[in-house]
Every structure is written in C-alpha cells, then in structure tokens.
Length: 317
Image (cartoon, rainbow, N blue to C red; front, top):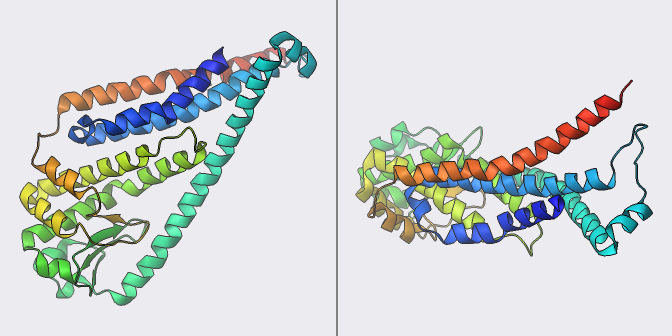
C-alpha cells in the first residue's frame, strides 16, 4: 500500500496538480513564491516516484542476516498474488526508468542549451556592436550587444559570459526610459539565473512519461519568470515605460535558449502591470504550501533509507 500511495502521489504531482495550478490566476500576484511552489511540486514528484521504488525494493528484496534476500520471486508471487506482484515490479521498473531519464535529461538540456548559447554569443559578438554608439542609458549595461536589425527586439544570453542583446530598431523606437526598462528586465534574468530554473523544469518534464506529465507547467513557469523580471524593471523605470517597451518588442524573434522580453505572454504581462499589486498574503500561503508539499515525500525517502542502514549496521558483527 505504501508503494501504491507514493505512485498515486507522483502521478498527481506530474499531471492534475500542475494542470490546476497552471490555470490559476493568483500566482501572477506572487510570482517568486509561486515559482518556489512549482519547484517543490516538481521535486516532490521525483521524490514520490523514488519513494515508490524504495518501498517496493524494501518489500521484494529485504536482506537477511547473511545479506541475501529473505524471499524468492516465487514466494513473493505466492504471498502477493500475480496482479499485485506485477504492479509492484512495473512501478519499480518505471521508477528506474524515470531516474535514468532524469539524469540523461539534465545532461542533455544543459549541454544542448549551453552549446546553442555559446554559438549565438559568438555570432552577436561578431556582428553586433558595443554600447559606445548607443544612448547614454545603455552605458550601464555590461555585455550589451546591438544588432543592426530594424525590428525592435531584446533578449539575453545567460551564462558565464552573459550578453544583453537589443536591436537598433529598439533604440530608434523606444525612449530612454523605455530602453532602461527593457535592459533592466533582461539584467534581472541574468542576475537571478532564471535560465537554471527553466533547465530544471525542462529536465523534469522530459523525465516523466509523456502520458502522465502536464505540458502546462513549463509555460506557467516561463510566465512567472518573466513576471519576476518585469517587477525588477518596474522598480527601475516604472510600469508604463515597461509596458510600452514590452508591446514594442512583442513580435521580435529570438534564438532558442535566450530569455526574451517579448513573446506570446506579452498581453498577459501588460495587463498584470496595470492590475492588482503583488500580495504578501498569497506569497506566504504559497511558501507554506511549498513546504507542506515537500515534507511527506522527503520524509518518505529518508525513513526507508535510514531503516535499511540501521538494519545493515545491526547485522554487522
């Protein structure tokens, strides 16, 4: 029953729970806390899946005093029955697959993303110009590159050698205050390393089977990350200049792996700038919920391992 319970929890945390949270509107009034809640849900889903595997392993492969399993496959089938035994073995196999896919996904996402960013960074360094010929407001931005493109666009390339990239069309179209707002938005992404948050969610999304995971989690986290950067820009330049800059750069095309100021969520974010302010009460509730989501799976992982270690040490002469 323990393995079955953790399996159901894991399935709920990768399917229905993210789908419900993604449809909620309150996270936009507490974006930082909502991201922490999303991270807790993702981590709890992984821990619950591993807890199911550990519970099954401790049931099927309990070591005796001599270190050998105390039960054979046939005796476990006789004790559990074919249906329950097959369910246990299937869940255990899926747990191993998820663990393997998670490690592979982390490596693949990290390597592919950094390779694309390094290639594009090389291109913007070659074809772009520095901020020496840009308006005075741009001189405060380190690693700024200006592309000779008429369409307004702005994005950043995170990493050790980060870049903030804007087009000449952005500088020609926006006022100094709006340029300051859009640059502050991109610098907020770089300071907080929002790219690492997205990488984690992308890896967890790829690790779970397609038929159980929710595709809305990544989109919701992207929107919250952009909202966090918007809040930082508002503190620098105010909501109106930022809203105008976001609308101007909404249609700008950006490379894969970059964090862009515009995009398909521009309308939602502009409405948010003119809506209700962030709520400390909602943030507190989200933080408490994130802690609660993590407590049970974490304890469930720690306790079986501690029990197994205690049993092994007790069996030593």
